Length: 48
Image (cartoon, rainbow, N blue to C red; front, top):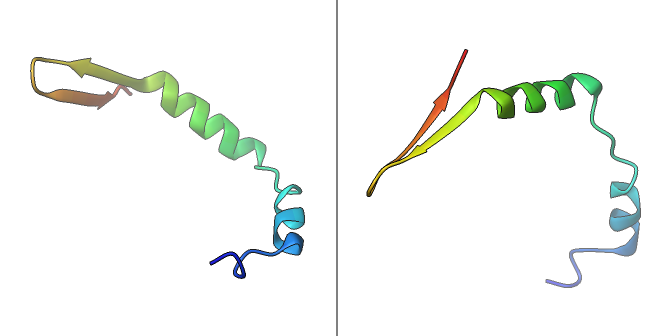
């Protein structure tokens, strides 16, 4: 499996930068997410 990954593929991944729209979407989603834990159940709600 070590032969699958090469130095060139690792070097190119350092240049990845998300769009500002993507960052804003993730931030807004995380602000709207509410997790309620009960005894054995966990509810995840997205508040609009």
